[in-house]
Length: 318
Image: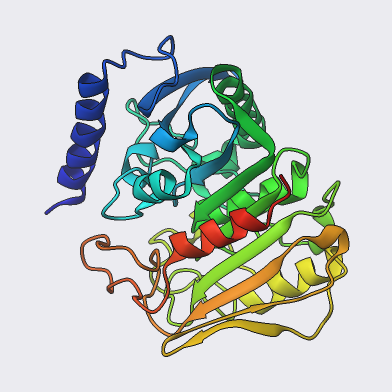
């Protein structure tokens, strides 16, 4: 199946959900189900898909901002076969917002995030993606009860880099981040000055050929290397946050199984979490996903990224 047909299938799935639930656009109340929200920010119309689980009614729910990888868009990340976040939201009771990055395309395809040094048109244009995501959170909380103490940014690849930028530049907005296959987007560690401690979970495969575990852009990162950056390594990214959060240098294991290991650095300032999960295989994909892009290595089955997201959410203050 071509990538274009995959996009069409994902879009059709979302539209079918809108029709089935009677959702017509931004004016619709955020009842259980999937909604499309459109926001004009910095002179451009931006959009997101927001899924409200059935069990989120009647109480303020956690909010997960789901940020797609470079060249993706909201509908692609909302495909449950590829990310499973809709099912995870129903299981764990959080609202999930699939936001689309900056795109020059008429239908918002091939979008990227301005994560500092990466990526593409969003970076080159200086897109105010931090401001857009702030506006999105305000819009959602105006239409549905959300626990502002439990807002988590979760991103894949360039979206993971954008999650790190939120931790650096909008720590008042998010209580924590999860970056999958995307390291910190600032070349200079001093450019990141978080206003408060935030929890950080990094998930990465050792055989990633896009964002190399040991640093740099891999052979599959981009045909045009000017659209990406010389990626910060996973160890350097974790070391930067260990310093910023004043965590202990010695890590302790929290998960150990064939093909995957997770560890945490205890004693972090503000009692936040700093964790690293590493898989031996899976390449540049979402661990636990049932499907990946055509031609890519299968996702790791040794780790379920959504289970780790749910566990981190449970550590956030209520």
